[in-house]
Image (cartoon, rainbow, N blue to C red; front, side):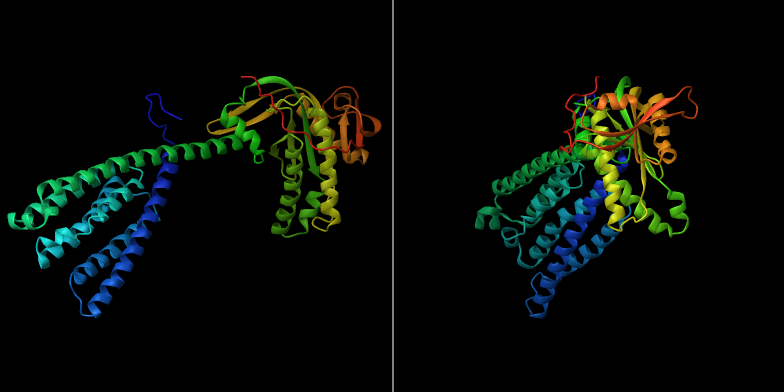
Length: 433
């Protein structure tokens, strides 16, 4: 996921800023906890009469508590700007400098020997979590500059001779270590940024795939689209289309509270969607109190008609279970199935796109489902489906009917039973592209 110039392909700015905002909030919470701990320790030292640099540490701790309380609150609303990130990084780097400066005022150059220099690398690496790769380099440069300033302004030739760790070489070695920490933290920041970009892009692409396919898509389908194994091309292909409708839903919803209506509807549609997924189809769209499912696209499944027929029987069985268990006592469904050549592809515009099927087959399948009311059946299939789904199914009929908007008669069969075998695996052949 790279741009044309070889750099990282940045995800949507809002999603990236949201990750930065959460990281900043986590950093602020961490520093607040550490500052609170140091404030308690400093108060304990002051109470015991061992002041030392306890007063300075207390002031620094209280300052950090106030500073990062504001930072935590701001990060709860929006991602930090670059200026805010720089200011907070400078504050974190300057904490050990302030504590060391207080010690120098009391103990002289000897305080540099026991200075809390390990806090500098911690501040440098924390800056990498802000996902602005240049910050660790700024932090390490600032830490090195502050340390050199402390050394230059407080040590004397006598103190350097007394403590070898205060020599110019030892001081430059410490600055070099801080510089190396900055480089490592910079590399860490770049890696975190790349990982964050990859995760954000994957999440965004998954949502785009789900929006293209509909509200309910099997994970294997999403994974294959993201991996490039499955191309969403526009083409003509032979598939099977299945429509499900809950009978009497308008009458059912008129006498109940909206929350109960939606709750039971969602339970039913979820159960039906699971069966579509289990039999190798995809839920293309939800249609109020029903759904439309595709078998044979985008996954190339040669037995798509057979899979759809078995799915229809499973949906009818799921409806019976919901009804008999009392979850949805009045649940009755009608299923219509037709197969043939359609145009499939990703259609739409201006951010509103979906993968769907277009053609007469879709219209016929929808109207076949509606004939269940007339024929007092639950699952109806066309002659084309009967011929394509193979042996092993129990059928009623034939029923010769006329569909609205079509000339001539259409032969339908009511599907009453089928082979009791395991659901098929998802197809392995990708759509051409």
